[in-house]
Image (cartoon, rainbow, N blue to C red; front, side, top):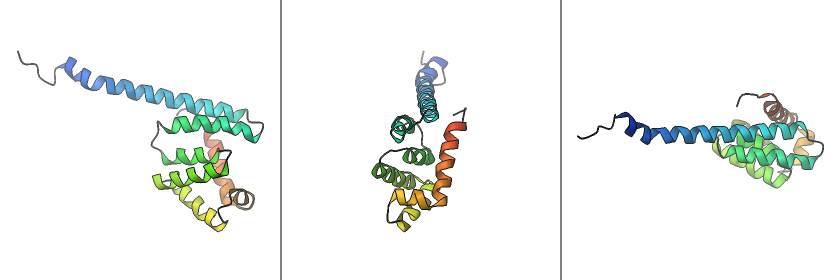
Length: 138
């Protein structure tokens, strides 16, 4: 006879795959976050940050958290990329990113100047570092 939508097999074929995809995405996200974390633990020079940024960029694809975009921005080795990503994070709704843009405006969009002279920026940066280093359960 006519099978109903609530029939288990049919239901599972409609929604089961979605769950698997979600699990896959979550797994990939966790893998990249952990790689970013271990890369950060072994940073010896500024260029080592590229590897951290690379994994964060890949993880960001699987997350809708605007603060992750901000964390990404803070680990870019190029100031231009960092500023672009801070703007992206702000447009996605990260309040910290919006504050940083205001601070950047005050420091004529010079990230290095901002890093040297602004305690709030250091705080955000330290927070991002410790968030990455101390989180075990993404």
